[in-house]
Amino acid sequence: MASQRWIQLAAAVSEYVFIGLLAWKKKADLTYKKVVLLLLLGFYVAFSMEATLTISGIRPIDWSVFYFNDLVEINTGVPVLYLLSWMFRTGWLREKISLIRQKLKATR
Image 1: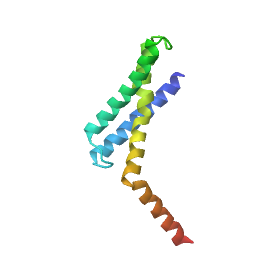
Image 2 (image 1 turned 135 degrees about the vertical axis):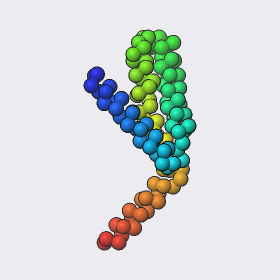
Image 3 (image 1 turned 90 degrees about the vertical axis):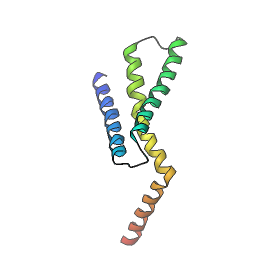
Image 4 (image 1 turned 90 degrees about the horizontal axis):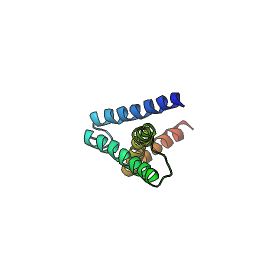
């Protein structure tokens, strides 16, 4: 289990490094402020879920699990969800799919 946590931590860090690089290159409508807001949003969502479970007595108070769940597990998916929403909002994905279709038609 501990080795899986290191893998998940590496995945979360690499995703935030990736969107940080996108913000640096000014791609995908990202700024450093948005990257920090995404991190805080993920933390807020996870904190509210964990706090509800802890207050109601469903989950015992274990701060190491609490921190890991808040800072890593939820934030692993936040950059991916942002990039997917950006792809659909801007039509970037539709454009790439149509280019692939054109290339496939040209090779036939």
